[in-house]
Image (cartoon, rainbow, N blue to C red; front, side, top):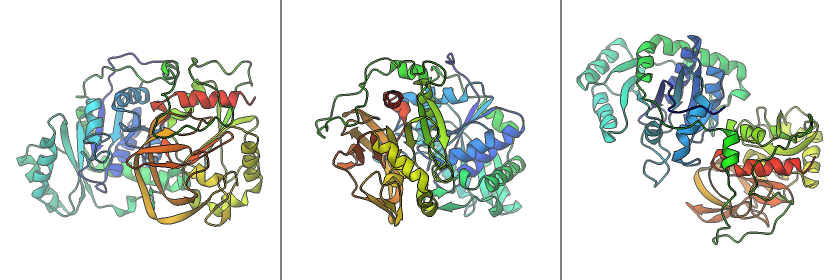
Amino acid sequence: MVTSYPFNVPRLVIAAPSSGSGKTTVATGLMAAFSERGLAVSPHKAGPDYIDPGYHALATGRPGRNLDAFMCGPELVAPLFAHGAAGCDLAVVEGVMGLYDGAAGRGELASTAQVAKLLRAPVVLVVDASSQSRSVAALVHGFASFDPQVRLGGVILNKVGSDRHEVMLREALEEAGMPVLGVLRRAPQVATPSRHLGLVPVAERHTDALASVSALAAQVRAGCDLDALMTLARTAPPLDCEAWSPAAALTRSAGLTSASPAFEAQGPEGGAPADGAAPADLGGAPGRRPVVAVAGGPAFTFSYAEHAELLTAAGAEVVTFDPLRDEALPPGTTGLVIGGGFPEMYAPELSANDPLRAAVAAFAASGGPVAAECAGLLYLGRSLDGKPMCGVLDADARMSERLTLGYREAVAVSDSALARAGTRLRGHEFHRTVVEPGAGAAPAWGFTHPERRVEGFVQQGVHASYLHTHWAAEPSVARRFAEAAAARR
């Protein structure tokens, strides 16, 4: 169902002056606290992060969804928001980094401020007040006045040390005319554990994560004026946009761009279907829909909800499996998606599952379509930190001290089951591992910005790369993959 427009739902953007101020604490706590009131809360995250949306989903019982103006384009932010928030009583958007921080060298692009403006949403600024008193007013004044199009509706003070500290902060902000909508004291018992790429995902600590979310809700209920926050959320005006729909997106998708002269396209491998035709009903009789198996479980937690929705709209049946536990691919698998996650934390367990590694290798060797991103790339290689993996790719992976992080502009170098050569996508890299070699004879992507290099592997039906992409930006890749899976029935 496509939501009609103008579209309206009360909404808040939770931002901060910088990372580490407590955005996730406040946003997740608010989502949980409002959900406990019986409201249908739609959770969203600005930027490419996969981990925070897992906590958001736990707090609300709804899929956490990303709003990334770099990967999907500013024009899709409001439609994707409306898609996720349809039928909800409130939407809460957690920002990324500092309020005005975005893609490097691109001005406001992909910043929380840009998302707030695109959603016409009031912003609540979470301020770490642990080392300041009256100066908080100058800080907040600067953020409120920097861009007049960003509407800063109030402040939540985090890590407040005492009653006296709170009084000084409130007095300063009252002079500045900025409402204080909440005060949270230092509460280390509510902290969620982190490691090399951020918070530990929900799937790895589900019981403890439930307790953390419950504690965050209690902290926010005690320290925040929920009624005032809801009143502020209701000041957001209607959005003149049509909600994104996976079926409509596939219908509108009119094929891919021509090959870029910057990277010579390789010859087709794997017999992937051509683009250009409208999405077809691939299902046929009951039980005849192509089965696309999607890796899940604690080792493979990174996914965007829209990917499964696009595959389903393209006619596929999406089935999740856990490479840590399941010893075979789901029955009837004709396509395989292995997304991101933390296989490096589970290398011994993944390696010990010999039957599944053999099944994945056999599926790939038969020419079956495989789309692998980051963690999936590591899993398909020969080894990970010395532990045998699936051996589909002649490459080895290991942990590294160096963090690779940032947005990328890419063009598909080789035809594959996922993308035709010349397909242009924006994506994101985020890993502390190294794969050697970094590219195969037929690379997956050529990066055009911020650096020029080729990366990843295309062989037979396999497309494997470090690059995380958001298929809503180019729905034809989902259609192409579903068609490749259907051809295997």
